[in-house]
Image (cartoon, protein in one colour):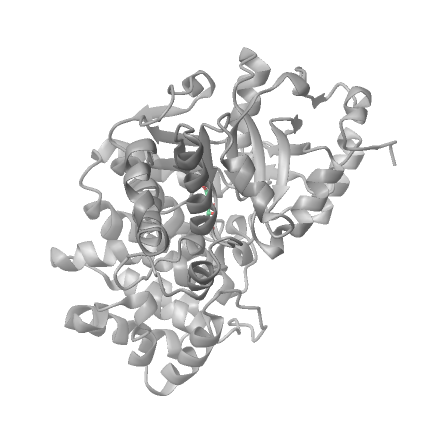
Length: 490
Ligand code: CS2
């Protein structure tokens, strides 16, 4: 095996010429972004754009201070500390070409569970002009029935009880804003980079509700000193495998404990509503807009919904990756028919050409044979994803009396998915905050199928719609009696 180098600041100089390394002095960067949730997505997306900005345009104003808040983030914290905040973006092109680039834009790193006060202090520093977030769909603690913030969620309730040692984003932001107000420091932009509709409006509403419980006198300051642009973010990154780490060692001589694997495609659309000057991120491909909804709808209802469908149906069949599932014509045909017949009619804010182009582009992204995007990754937290990616389509179709047969089949397939056994009798794990309820209710629904769609936290009042109930009952009957492949072919 070729000689390889542990990834850290000192070794940047000795990496071979086929590795892209930061061509800038990281010590000269000003940190003005504090980002909460330094997972794979942030590292492949926002931190990548900022790295490009520094690399190509020598704009040293947007260094990132990464912050993680969850106990489960400890591994990332240890690795980033070990690697001086550096990591590799490993891009895999459809034709097999691959590239390794070291990203240097995360220049500081804090870990909430270890020192919450240090995080609050850093968040409140006047240099921090943007607090951005990727806390995943379930980090917003939304009540799926009403779509409103779940103030009674155990994590939120805990922060309300102990506001000075917060655990949630809401607790941290509140303490930080309190300090900013007290010290007469300017406000900042809260930039949600999560995959939920109206992500900026959502975090704003939730935060204001939280604050009105714990610090009502802060409400006015927040309204006057902060903004919450909505954003649309997109880049597929599969779970990093040990094989990926080995190839990086062999082909690029890099020993990175946690590289990020990405497709070449990336998109970031942001509403231009910043407290301080609008960053000149358009230089590196960011799109600014004052009409975000059409971008969000295409992304959530087409791309993310497709993923969820491939995840559930593919897993039931015994497939492991998105590529495998979309290489099977039966699954591809079903998916395309769902997108054409049931989603497209609901996308009234985009023109047909744009919709068709978008559909083609996502299918070709799914068919990149070198992105081993695991169905296991996609199926995680389906209980938070289905209400965001699939149910808005169902509701819109029902409102205009249009088809929902394929959506109903997908929901029925999800009920069966929660049995945890595929069509070849192999078992798989269900990773979901609601897994207990899902597994229990899926079992009950074998005798009494309606039970599954009565999970209120997911389906809300949809079971009150007889058309939905009929379509679902018909679909579940089919799904329970046949293998999934048979069901989608009919
Ligand atoms: C996926 C997303 O988790 C999911 O369900 O659909 O992670 C998807 O890969 C990203 O949103 C792509 O931008």
